Length: 97
Image (cartoon, rainbow, N blue to C red; front, top):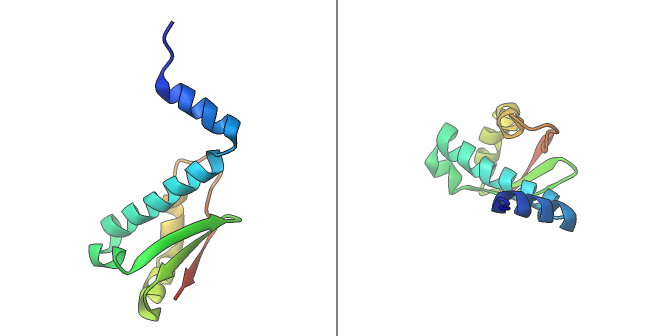
């Protein structure tokens, strides 16, 4: 009898309690993809998603202008990050300079 490796990995990740960390990494990578595809590739070099805590995504920005640009798009970014998820991983975005 054969078992898919992905099934084993998912089961072991859940057992170890690392599933939250793995999903957080997925959200950080998804944020980078959204910024690059939807906004500007140059913007991707000026922002860096840092971590998620209490459903708040913390993002580092190189200056106030970049943070303001992203703040205007915050709702759309959150909707895209949460699309297709049972429980939304992100409710707010915090911008640091």
